[in-house]
Length: 339
Image 1: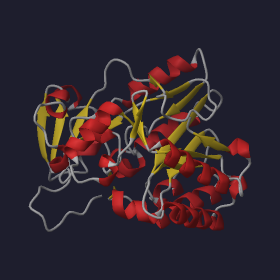
Image 2: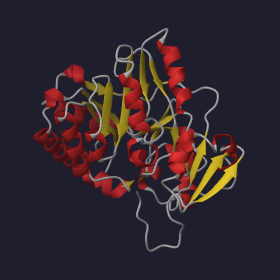
Image 3: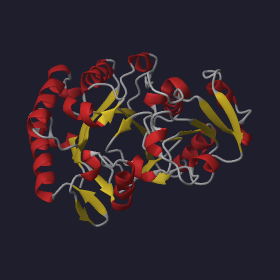
């Protein structure tokens, strides 16, 4: 969790908003038990707090609040065009948690949501039921840590464990990806490795981590976690995505890859993903309002078909270089590049 001692903001999750309809839900009770000193405020609907006008997400990130709610309507969504499907035909994602306890300056969530507070949907049983209904007619590749980092909030919610247990009951037609920057070794030590549950570790050079990935574990800690997961028999994907431009990027990414494959046997990886930073036009506009001094937000990007990306020559240079280096360790079929 964030340690922001020495400032005048309330502690992290000092206030917890709870929808009236989920006040007695078992998962609500379990979560509230972990925050006995928090002020609990009952509300009608999570959007009354999360979507209210005139919020300041940049200030909210200094003292995030927690909102416990029930998700209604559509629970499974087709995968976005800017995300890699890894060759899976039926690619979907789901969001049982909104926002993230990390604070990466380039994160598209800053442009997607009006608030920096965290929403946890406690009705996981409804998510599972929707997945089972879809599995009755087709196989499913499902990203469950898409608009958040579930593992980073595992000590609060336990959702990654719940999805792992759910997947264990559906070994034939369901494949799950849990993407993370977390380095909590304790979690993996308690889980059974499943070939159809992929833990996707986002790795960035330490220069990127220090400048732009606030509150996240270091590159070294993430690498050690990924290596431990590989050794324990988990299905592991390494995500060099998004690549972020920094001065001396070539050297930083070269050094990162050399370190990665000194400690991870490449043949034991499920695959890797590569892609430079890209973001929808409207999201970047909101990010810039929130972060007037952010280098990633104010880089002079190119606009193409509604998405901003690095100038084409730089984008292609960065991605080609990384793919070229990865070919030193991995076969072509294990390297997925966003198109």
